[in-house]
Length: 299
Length: 249
Ligand SMILES: Nc1ncnc2c1ncn2[C@@H]1O[C@H](COP(=O)(O)OP(=O)(O)O)[C@@H](O)[C@H]1O
Ligand SMILES: [Mg+2]
Image (tube, rainbow over all chains, first blue to last red; front, side, top):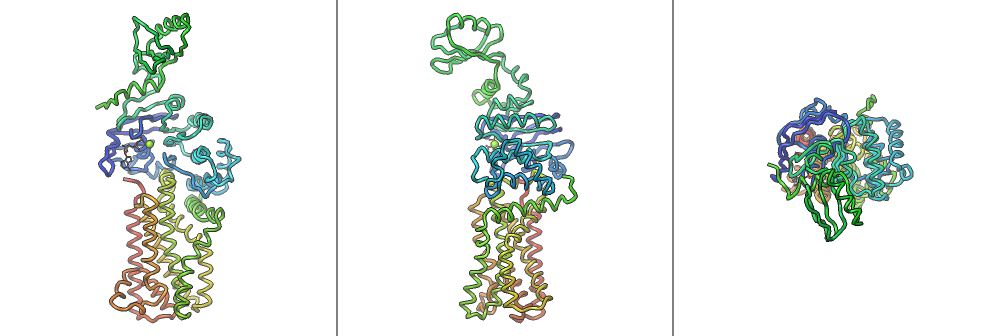
């Protein structure tokens, strides 16, 4: 799958500037995660690429097809779950998936078979004949995702698919996306940074309608000078001669960003002083906080 | 996906979602569709001591297809605004025309029970030849295209359910209750009669009433009625195709 985006901007009718010249080049399958605060422009970007919304300027090509003039061809191989998608309350899960597949062109019998498979994969077969209005919020979300997963689309847009799901359901979905991403490109927006980090082959950080940074997690880690983050649970821990950066998080927790060789020394000292601590490689959360510190508006 | 009956499958999907499954899962909706055209038919019949029954029976069929249009408007808005189904359809191989055609047919399927009752009433009380019956069906068919095109057009502009209720609430009385659909136009005194001619359903009703020999209109007026009904229908259809918002701006 190949997506080429050139300077796409979006100004809504109320003169709200939602995207300011976004350029991207995605030339691989896998998961492309888009993260960013509320209002960053994630949904706007996804809706434009999913041919639901016209950009104000700029252009894009998907597998060589022009987004504006050849949207019909693009729609044959894409599928999207809108952020605010809801299940149709008077349908059962099986009817929901089945009819969506028929909208994609499958015959009734093909659609029924595929729908059953997809619901089974998400462990929804026990409730496949209940009316969706009687399902829990998480189950409803899973039914919508099952709908898309059952399709033959090779470019899938999922706008915050895991918001509101419990941890185990989220993990179920991650496993599924993991197997699916091999032969598809999944554009995923999310608020869970760990999700973007675990699933996202490429991560794109959006802020105020611009791409702040983009790359694999390894590439993004290089944006921060220090590669480790230690959490030290103590109220009077002092440290001198540190090549690093210390942040007090609460009265009895400090965060130390530093490089590998210091981690070793500090850890030794903390062990001998019997102070509780953890350390890990710098996470996407740290990078996110670092890059969006003070709401930097990259001009 | 590569199935031969691609478009047919897509149309069936709309019919399943919007009528078959709704009827299976909530049978009470059937009574609901039957009630509106029938209640007015009963009122007009009793108020006229039975003399207007044949005209009202024809009128009820016209009202029923107008209801198809307002229901289409409501259903499309509901699926678009509250469930974002339309966005999922936009990002799929189903185009606007196929989707809406399927949904329009689904409204017809939905009203099959009501239509059956009304057709039986018409067969009993409005005695027409087969040819005249076919002619009336054409007339009603044009009204169906008119009302569903209008319904689709409005649905693409409504942004929430309250707005879409308002559209339905305005259309039904303006197109079916007030105009001379359930009664002859000659009952309206001048100058108000001119106002009645603003509604395309007035022409459709005139055509149906004259075909059944219930009212007399001149040949010229009949041609004029067809001309206006078809022109308005094509105009609304054209606007619906060119101006409706399938992709948001
Ligand atoms: N239909 C709309 N009309 C006007 N402004 C909008 C519309 N949709 C989104 N916006 C604005 O555009 C910005 C980006 O929104 P959105 O793409 O939904 O962000 P995100 O998905 O990252 O939370 C926000 O400031 C939002 O208020
Ligand atoms: Mg969003």
